[in-house]
Image 1: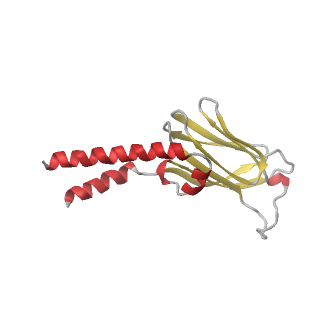
Image 2: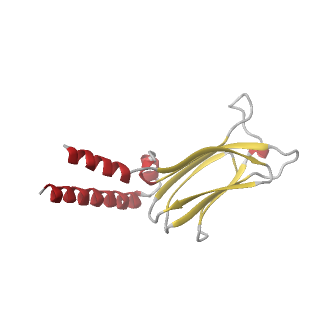
Image 3: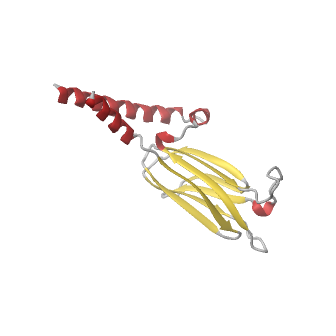
Length: 165
């Protein structure tokens, strides 16, 4: 019984999520970048949205409250480039290990305004938007990730049987 507890603990540690979910402010004419260190073949999903400062949340945002977003790897590969958007998302599989950056810039505006952005960045197995990721053609990468987890669990199981014997 104790072995099963250890196996659950080990598998739980292997599945520890790596994610960032935050809200930040950016002034017009400025840039803010957020980076995430990722392993190769890691899947990632990011969602961002400018928070509407008006009381009436259904009112459209003016052009002064829109962002430019660029997501790149440390090797210069661009995974997303969006101009004048109020919300969006990106989904990709990291080709190489390293730092991946999401940079948000607010167009210059006078008088200065401050935009509040909700940003949720999830990597690895903890993001739960599997259906939308599969729709975007990342089934092969998901298969590789599941095979890696399967082999890891099998090796843990075999090691437990070895210790038991």
